[in-house]
Image 1 (spheres, rainbow, N blue to C red):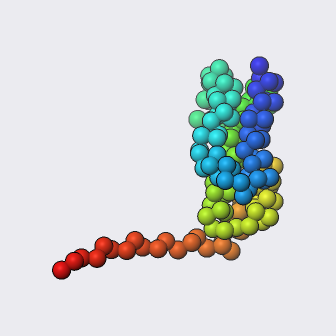
Image 2: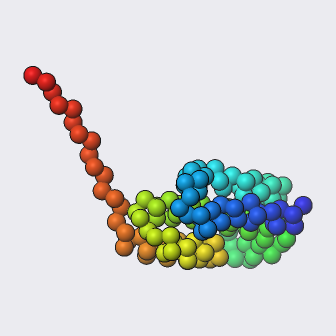
Amino acid sequence: MTGTLFTLTFALAAPFWALMLLLPRWSGTARIISSPLIVLPVLVSYALLVLPALADVLPAVTAPTLPGVRGLLGSTDGAAAAWAHMVGFDLFVGRWAWLDGRERGVPALVMAPVLVLTILLGPLGLAAYLAVRVRWARPAVVPAREPQRLG
């Protein structure tokens, strides 16, 4: 089951990455990506991998040591769970960057390499987006007009 979940994990996230990269201007992409629930299938995969091994996982994460974490990640179950963890968080970060980029007006051709970097090397993709986003200011919020009083 571990091998199947490992393979399935990225397959569950791939359609959302494809929408952000290949169809960034399609209205359906915005509708779908705006939901944080897009990460739920990957989180279920993670839970299926971690929960049965909780007795081994908890000691490694509550009092982490390099040998303890190495031992956990060196196992098939640990590596598959770590993969699901990375895929889930990378998708959530990519989703945030894509939505924030749309709000700021960051061009799709600028976002595409940032998103690819986020897929491949999550934290470096986040760093790239944080560097990119300073170029595009958040749109100014126009205050609501106060109702006019009669009399």
